[in-house]
Length: 336
Image 1 (cartoon, rainbow, N blue to C red):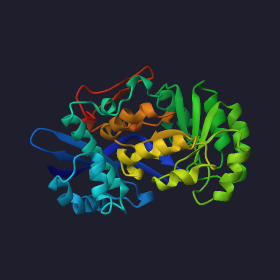
Image 2: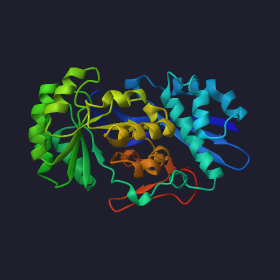
Image 3: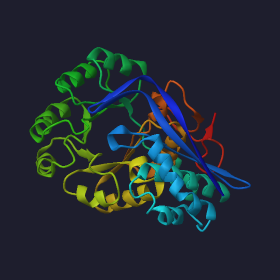
């Protein structure tokens, strides 16, 4: 087994702005595991907010090469446990390796990943399509550019309700809003009343992750369900979100891959919380991986490749009507 990796630029169709950052190009790290007969691909994007760069992701992968190539593991779960000490400060790197391990492992089993997990691809919830922060006029233009049944609207401005009111004039689609920690508890509670009237399905991460008292008030008084994002990064966060959020949004890159995400989904469901998996503007490598576990979810945000002006891979094809997987086994994405 050989481990290799390389960095790619993912150009975006539009400048992507959320409450704490903007970008026109997304850097991504692709990991490849290869033996004599098969190969597996994994992906993780970089993220300055979490201090994750291509350099430190690659540096962390270097720490695990000997363990990976020794082949003293028989499954992705075993590899994840074997290397978790090396990746303790860099779950983004572990995600890419874990994803590649699932890809090659299920190819060797002669199954697609969702088949190996016993999941029904027809049970995948429809992804939302994300509209980043911009002028109201440009946000309307972006929405009209892609006619979609569900939009996630990024908020965190001084005129958030005005944005939703104006967008609502142009579509009957369901809205989900994501404030990326930008609001106070009072704002979130007050806004929820108006957002409910505007056919908003839920609010994602309205408050900063350390505002626990505020989230208790929002959880108790919000007219809309609230979903954790920045408050639910790794497995130990799931239980902490119970009683503060109605559901969690798991990002594979932040959690450390598919292996811990599957455990997080199981735990969240046992606590009565809804489950969502979101993306971090990955190419079709990472997005296709999300699609394979999407039958387990109540909501999914896997539009990352749809936001790119040029993809580096072929993989899952998503339309409002259906999700079509690539023909091959494993995760099945291929670089182009």
